[in-house]
Image (cartoon, rainbow, N blue to C red; front, top):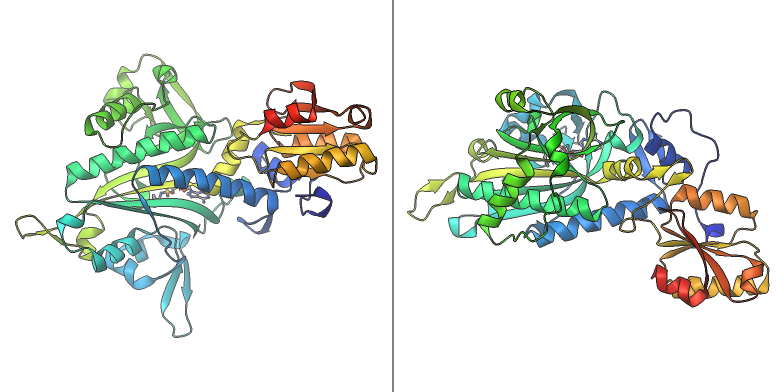
Length: 434
Ligand code: P5A
């Protein structure tokens, strides 16, 4: 993209309404704009980041064996009456009426709808297990939307739903999803720790939140310092091996880490090095057995012909929240430092003298070779403004093209994360970046 023709409205001033670094930087770097309380429009750079995150989430869900679908945002209240949640959900649910005066709602989550879909299509134990997910906008009329996209009212979630014949099968599905999450967060460039959690309005008796430690986080967390020494990389574990999955689950959850110090009081009492802190909840997984399948009448014929009520789990990732969370984890005074995996562009090309034949030719050449992966700062602004905007926007690489170097075919390459700079030929710089 050419910056001179793009909608990337960067701000020099710090917006007064933003209390935390990620919210300030998302506004200053021109990623989003609020359109009403807790509701945001995603501008070109922000939309690219959001799609990059969604794509990594998608690839890891697919790798775990989950199937992508797309369910609607608008749901019928009837389904929620069947599970008993229509009244129970309270004022967080945005309720609507259609022209025939039928009760509808903007989905805050999809347990009911997916249970209905399975009820219509799955008849036999042979069709289980199933795991279905979508990446779709949700609406929750939060009492206090705040911190920008971190706690929005409209937000993008990946939500997956597993269906198994029995408890043992559901436990395997739960562990697979935990593995998929660890791999996802690692690829996104953050460390998220699974912490035992309360289940709230989703229900059930087994649940983990995935928490990125950050001083500005909304969640209070309690953990054993031993967890800091665990290898969370989830390297050689196979989705196909139940023994692998069991071992992996043990490793991930053995040192005490919970969003509530009373979650398992006996374990907490035994913790030698107690730690408390703040964290950002970027994912949350639940096993809730037959909480929805039972009242909604989902049944499959079991091997002996009897009617079996499938066991379910649901698994969320806050895709739009992650944009803020990643910035909390990767920024400095000057701006964002995007991990390579999610950056809106791999590199910015900074033309320090637009109109200079050598500078223009080199920039155009690099821009063409990078085929859509570069943001070309072709504005006729002064160099200082371009450096400041590039640092603010957080491109992993900056390719700086000035008249002195350009005359000799040389450019300066800067790595945003470390601040390292090197004077290189155009070819060498491109080779490093691509
Ligand atoms: C799990 C998937 C659920 O809704 N049902 C389907 C279950 N879980 S959850 O914990 O309530 O939400 C999952 C993740 O969504 C993100 N999230 C939010 N992000 C931005 N703004 C919000 N208001 C918001 N609420 C939830 C969180 O990352 C959460 O872990």
